[in-house]
Each structure stands twice: as structure tokens, then as C-alpha cells.
Length: 393
Image (tube, rainbow, N blue to C red; front, top):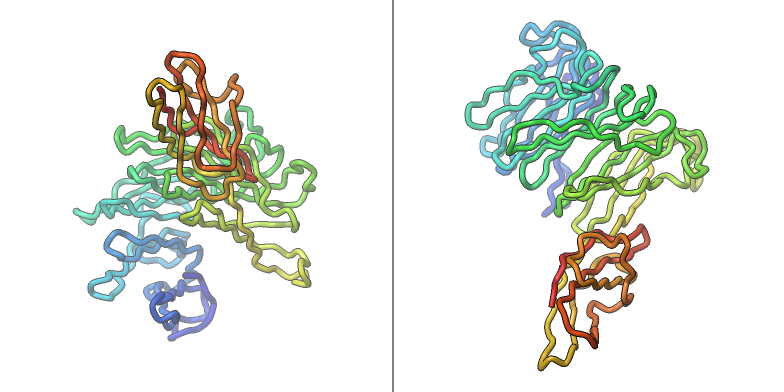
């Protein structure tokens, strides 16, 4: 899905939203469809999601005076029904607004409720479309702590239908300064409340912008953005930065620089595969591998920190003091660190590992009696995993 100025199927020479689908069975792309058929003016910045019934939901920015929306920019929405093979009529989402609305992001939850965020009047607004009533909620201001402009929202959802949002904010939140930084919020589905803002780009000393967020299959949160900070000597040009966080931890990972071999890297997007590898793309004018200095699309793959393993044990038998620990091999693991303590292990802080191994098992020969707790971490190229579960004997 993209916006295009081509006069395709009499769509006119203004920007329209085009769509194609790739058939995995035949390995063939469909013919192009024009989604913004009711639009008579510019249609740009599309965002797409798919619900549990494989219906397709699209939002975009449009200046067409549809449903008396006026000629300012508004957020439009359409659904493709998988059963009927038809697109619905276009709806205006930003009906509550009196100013330009743009840069929407859309996601569907497990109940097929549609959630949309967008930028309007230098703020971030949110609405949802109930799948049962087929009615939109009222607009809700999300960035309530902001004292300055906020823009470029990106939204995703976890396995418990909690919403996760990132955006760029000029407010001096948590001492971030008045340059744009990347802020994060979570909407708790149980309490129906948005959290307070968290600062993600804490290492940045200059402009941080255009963030994107993803939740992987283990509910780990991944965030990528463009940043002009000269971090670790990468220069004062735009680079692509990345962080991740386990949902149940308070702190974010260390900062990773994605675009090490290029400069003026902007507008990142990314995906996470089943092996927890992060795949990132971005715009870049760098003359890399004879690409010349026009704008090109760059790609890289980042393994990230390994997943935490599930630890199991057996023994000791006949009070021989032999403890057998085992776990499944973890993708991208270089080695495994084993920790033992007489107290439940909640963190490795202050502990010294008793061993490190490249095997997926460990045998401990205890020569004293008592209760002992074990946990392990996985060591990879991008750092160590979270702590495994704790077992005790």
C-alpha cells in the first residue's frame, strides 16, 4: 500500500492510495487497486492493519471535503471485507477536529476493534471503532503531559490487547530538553487508562523523530527512530537508533545504532521475525556500494538480545549432591551463564556466575546441604538476555 500521483483507472493526477496483495501460494502480485476512490484531492500517508477475519483496514491523510469535513487535512478510513471482496465507503475519522489531522497509525485487537492515533494541532489523538456496534468512540487526547508540540505517532498492540504508543515530543519531559525526543505510553486494557509518558531517547542530545514501534511474539517491545545525535562518534547527521524492552521491566535496553555504514538516514520502518531478528529499512542518500547520491532504500538485519530460556532441573538422587540443569538452545546464543544463590534470584546484580557454557545443560556437584536457587542468562552478540525462570533444590 502506498500513495501515488499516477492517473491510474481515472484516479487523476493528485495523490491517491494504491494497494496490491501478494499471493504466497502463487508468488504473484495482484493488479493495482485504487482505495481512495471518493477522494478528489490529495491522499497520502497510508497506514494498514488486518483483523482476525483477514479483513483489511486502512487509514490515510486526505484534504477532500468529504462528509462536510472541509478542505483541511483529515484522517480517512476504509475496510476491505474478505467475505464480500469489497471495500466499504470512505469514513472520516477526525470528525472532532478543527485543524489539520495527519500521520495516522492503525492497529486491530483480538476482538477486531480498530484503534487509530494521529497528529492534530501539535497533539496526539486516539479513537477506536467498535467491531460490534460499528461506531467510533470520541477523540481522546493522549499526550496530556506535553507542554509543547507532539507528532509522528506509531501504535501497536500486545497479546493482552494493551496498546503501546510512541511519538516525538518537544516537551522537556524528564529533563529531555526542548528538542524533540521519543516518548512512550501504554494503554492498559484492564484499567482502561493510559500510563504516564516514558522517555525512550534518553541518550539523545539533539532531534529524535519519526519513531516506529512493534511488539513481538513474546511481547517484547521494539522501537526504532531517526536521530541526529552524535552518539558514540557516528557524526551529526541523521542515523537510525533502536531500543527494546521486556514489558515487565522498568528500564529500556541500551541504545543500538542501526545505520553504521551510512549518513542522513531517515524514515525508518521495521519488522521482527519469529527468531527475534529485527529487520529494518530506511531512506538514505549515501553512495553505498555505488548506489549514488539519490535517495535509496537501505536494509539491515539485527539479531538483538537473545530470548531468555526456560530452565528445568532434576536431582539430586540418593543425596549425591548432583544437580542437572537443562534448557532448550536459544537462537543467536554464544554462551550461557549459570547463577546459583541461597536466596530466590530476581536479578544478577551482585551475583557472580558459577559457570559459563556453550552447551544447553549444566551439571553442578554440590558439596553442602541446604536450599539453592538457580537461574541462567543467554549471552549473544548484542548483549545478554533477561534472567530465566528460577528453579530451586
